[in-house]
Amino acid sequence: MHRCDVNKICFLEKEGFPFINIKKEFESEFNVIHCTVPMFGDESGELSVPGVNKASAIEALIKHLNIPRENTYAYGDGLNDIDMLEYCQYGIAVGNAKQGLKDIADEVIGDIADDSIYESMKKHGLI
Figure 1 (cartoon, rainbow, N blue to C red):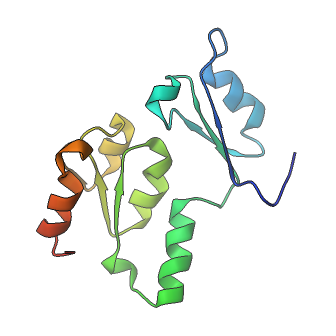
Figure 2: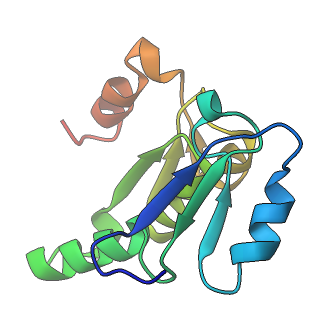
């Protein structure tokens, strides 16, 4: 079950098999995140290796590039973006994001299809 070349597994909703069953089965070994891709269904999600997430990747990158954390921005739409938005100085959820992500974001912008990330980056002086 443990491999060094896989860091995430997505699973799809299956009628009659609720997310909570998957969580109970795997939470002792993996991060279990609920419904990361809405088109997969409300009972879908992903399993990932503990300690390996978007925040840990950003942390490694900014250390390597010697960029202060205060200069970090994260844009997200799914619950698998929570760690990233919480880690970065500015955590921004797009308008079509899952409500749980909007709840923890520093800012919620418009829908991703409406160039909201571009407009936000301009607003914050990133471009």
